Length: 148
Image 1 (cartoon, helix red, strand yellow):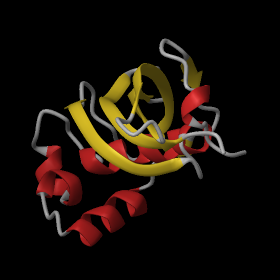
Image 2 (tube, helix red, strand yellow):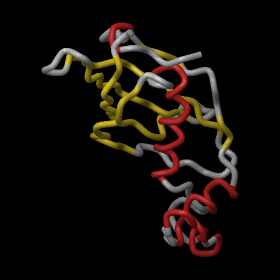
Image 3 (tube, helix red, strand yellow):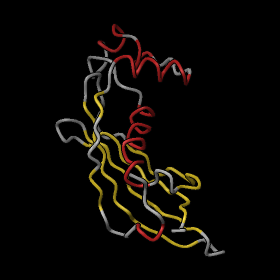
Image 4 (cartoon, rainbow, N blue to C red):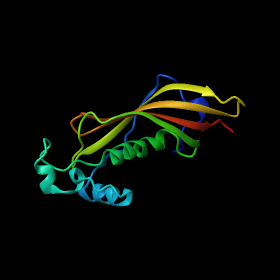
């Protein structure tokens, strides 16, 4: 299913994304390796056991990236020109190996570009774990195609 064209975005509309993903230890390890993030809180079991969390945390940038990925099929798949910004990123609750995440997107703003050929859409994206704890929230602004 393709994403939405600019005209199809409605300010105030909330989309509950059906796709979910259980985060594995391997997901976290690979993401940290690819991004060269060697934070022991993500990778070192013994180090993490001594923290207030008592175990390793999933990299927050992976959590955010996963939330974007879960939202794309229902929002911008095939209809985006570019992501323009990610703003006001929050991680109010930790993510652990084995957590299953889902995402929700609310359209908060839209406007045509000055040439009228495309549109800028701002969406508030939230990610939740299997207990419905909010684990990540941010605003995503995308340059969107208009309907052909």
